[in-house]
Image (cartoon, rainbow, N blue to C red; front, side, top):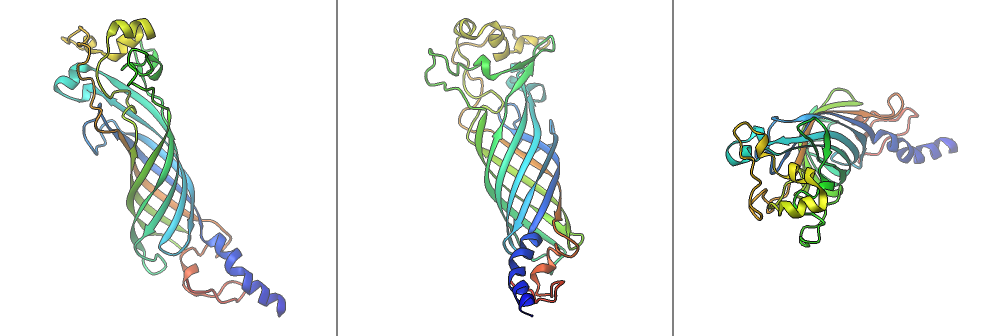
Length: 288
């Protein structure tokens, strides 16, 4: 009897640690908004994205999520119009992201089968913009300092870092399929603190200085209007606008989510675990 009493006292700690832990999987699309993609939310130029992580439920409404996402971003002036199309710049980058989020679910899924939710937190991500030249060679853009970043002649143009901090936030809706499984749809935005996700931010620099410091390939990648049929092959005047530095870039990930409770049979009775039912050992579960 004494042993059973001890188990009943410990079970809320040991058992709930399993019931509250979930594996999360995401599959969907990633896209960005910036100097080469003027639309805020669109599937145009979107790429596949995947993610996985762990979720820990503090209560039926509040949870912490540790996640890792992988996706691709791109932008191309050929998809724009007017002066932007004539500029003819483009970029691609892979995105590798780790995040820690706090999630709030409106309804208790032990009582409801469907509920909206919101989340926000912090993330660290890696990017490295690149493009392809006219011969199809892959060219990474940061080492070229296309806007004078890191050049002594432009002391205000600091080199940007490829590993940066972001603030992810968003929301979604999830549907309880069973006690252990939920399906959902999620839309998450990342507020960035850089305008160089696409390697385009401010004004053109002197092509002679750029060529002497970073080579002719840097000049070639800084302005590509001459590659367009009927385009202007002349490099723009030094100091003319290349991008908009006032607004930072953004990227976002949207897609379907799958949440699976971890634990043994009935051990992740994930949502009924909050409702006061008895455990398998006959110990009453505490109502949270």
